[in-house]
Image 1 (cartoon, rainbow, N blue to C red):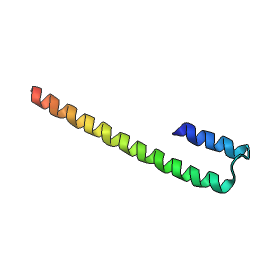
Image 2: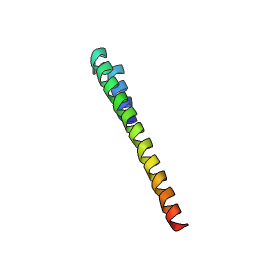
Image 3: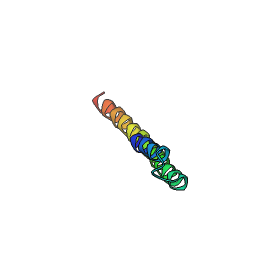
Length: 59
């Protein structure tokens, strides 16, 4: 995702896309990146909780 944002910036700096399209796509990518980060945190939390349950079952 961060690579896409970097490539988008390169395209804008090289005048291959205009500012309006750049800003629109940049906003979309940043939102998607934030959603992925949130999802990652939720998955890691679930893994931790599962690990705790497994440890309690072993005790």
